[in-house]
Length: 318
Ligand code: GLN
Image (cartoon, rainbow, N blue to C red; front, side, top):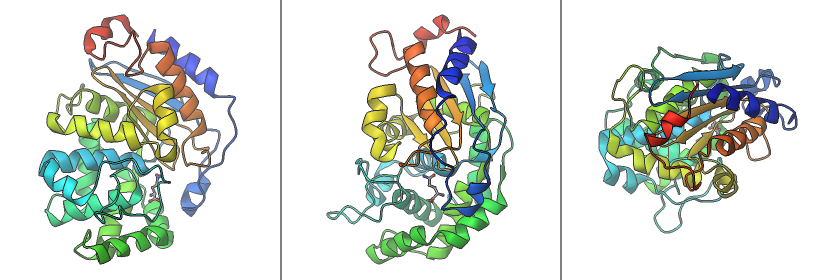
């Protein structure tokens, strides 16, 4: 049933050939726009995929919920909340706007919030070298991942909007150490190479309350998962978050390389990849495929047939 659902989602989404690969990070403009892959990993360890599910791409903003869960797991919610809010801003991912009352970024899913979290994790000695984040992603994916150095260098060279935002946060006291070093860690964080299969396994780790369902390794604290998924639910798709949540009912996060991660809590994780983006920076085919899967498998959090627990699992057979 899962394989069939993936194939139907693939066929439904494939005709949507509009949109364009991201070009503001020059290295991303080289992506093959025709690539399209979907993968599912269930919390009882099953994996199913269709299309280009083994094609590598950079994780980009899909790294943000992972860094958030990492910060919640290692530092606890109070410290995290003091540095970054949990309110949807309804703004684009790269907007240069901070909460006028608190001076904090609105949430950890926009670039400002993600950079603020890198600063906090670095100050606290959790995120000291790029390899620290790579190790976390590798544990969540259940295999050894690598960086794309070209994408890192491309972002470092051209990321002046992120640089402007980071200096604004230095001015507000949200960043308290060397801005360029924090930005480098953030650019490395965005440059982890993954596949749709990896993203599905990372999603399944989040769906399984922080423990990788195949390796059985506890990657995130279970207590970090409710906040992580709530923030994804409200803010993961930026200024499309409301429409997305009505259509799919899944906490999710997109990245500008064309990836989408989505989680059906206590059930399964989805990883999608197709590099053509809409004007908000979300994968066009990824959105259509996710919507189809959500409908076919009754994954919407508020669908009458979704019991939001692994009680449903026996009915979803490969
Ligand atoms: N590295 C990208 C940036 O900072 C991440 C943005 C994204 O994936 N939405 O601009």
